Image (tube, rainbow, N blue to C red; front, side, top):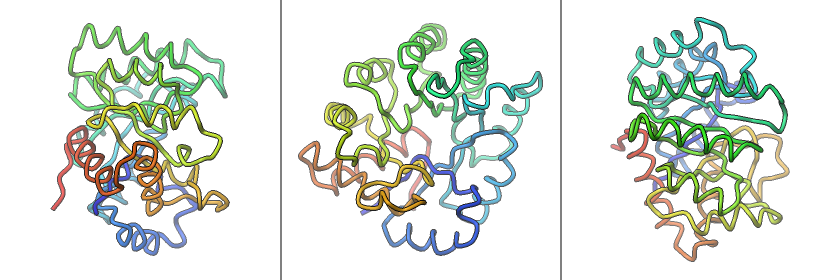
Length: 262
């Protein structure tokens, strides 16, 4: 059984003491590819080094909405240059809107749209972070979809929206990725969304080191090996085998990000 973890943050300090052991565990768990997200372009060198050390890692470059205040005049050109510099860059992001922890809405809009423009120009998918902002993200993506068509594509990562909101983004052609939150007993809304996503748009992730799934929820650090628990929960929700979920989500990740499995 092969799995792809479509959203990790392995460059964080939490992983530095034992990253080789973490890798050994994800290999034993059947994780054959990983997509490393990016919070700020300044992370690029550290993420690139990981991808060079571990060839199963591909990655993104972008600016997280909670760091929108760090956007400068040269940031767009920097992201574009970095994205073009390495064939292991498979996406722009993570980007989006987060109104749960910040209220600089206009600034976030500007940064989000600037990165969508880069992705459209480079014909790369986007990794979207959306928290307490689904209607606004939908409005922006609808506008870009009308002007750019298929060039604006990507994934709603660590999805926590309602089934109605999920349908919005499916209609726009986006993939929906579920993290360890789908395993939480109280996450009925997320589980309802996981039940209704069409098979060809379904992805799984850990968002490690955050949001360790049940039964690892008490641990301080999530890791890629635990993406199997996400697959197991989604299989249970959808009445499918975990092997079928693994096969479908792996195929979907390869299609969206242009990955290959040897």
